[in-house]
Length: 213
Length: 174
Image 1 (cartoon, chains in turn red, yellow):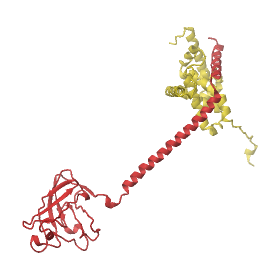
Image 2: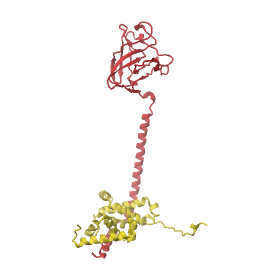
Image 3: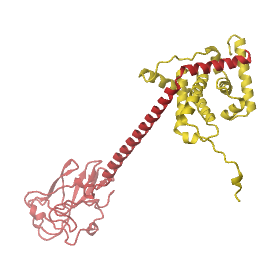
Image 4: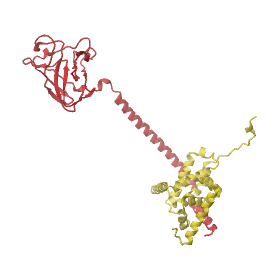
């Protein structure tokens, strides 16, 4: 090929392009594309802001619940495990045998707790006792059970002798350590009408003593 | 006394983008076609390069050589295989939805000749197209490709020899 041939091919291509492309139309399309790009960018940014706000709002709501609505959770260390529970409230006691009975709902697990009366304080016979005191009950919990304050075991009822088993919390307030129960893993205080001094009447309180809290 | 007052004040007139576009668009299409071999892709690649210039026109217009910047972008887009395929797909999509007039896939040019040019090594190919299609001098090409002028001349010479050899051997580049 001669040197002029290269220039001829190049000129022919450029000339063909000039004849076949519509530059003014291209310019119009460019402005339209740029506008569309901006609209898409704004839409994407707005969507991102909305999603961020929604996620942030949900996160805030999930972290801003009142403490009363947040269950206190503990997981038993070794399962199955026997835990000693101190119950300070009404429960059922068989006036004939002196045995205490309780039924409760452990986070959906209904247990007819084989409550054994280990120790009581107070005057009078078992069936007659009233006043301050503690009852240590042994309840076997299912493996993997997670106890929350919704798992309060409610002991109480209308069995004969129930009245005899009422215990009153110290009027000066409740301090778990005051009970001096080193072997107790979990302390459950069922507080109904005769609540501790810092409790709202009728509201249940659960205190965990020891264990994984 | 401030010595700068004695210096000549250079005031460059900033070109309107519309004038820049209308002048450069056909040239960039031709350059992109020379490098990519696809008319559909060439128009989209040139459009993409000019769109980038448009978005930053306030800055690019103040450059000494806005045209060199545009050619660098066009060449980079055209030599990217992925970019070329995307541009072709976009052109086909636009034609399918009727936003573009259906086009032939090639311009009226010697397809065999330009196929041989596209078989050249990258730098030789770019130099060849900028010189013979866009009409740039070796000095201008050295600005665009950021290489020495002597290198441009070497690329041009070797490109010519390779294409000529192809024709002499009946089109067999290997």
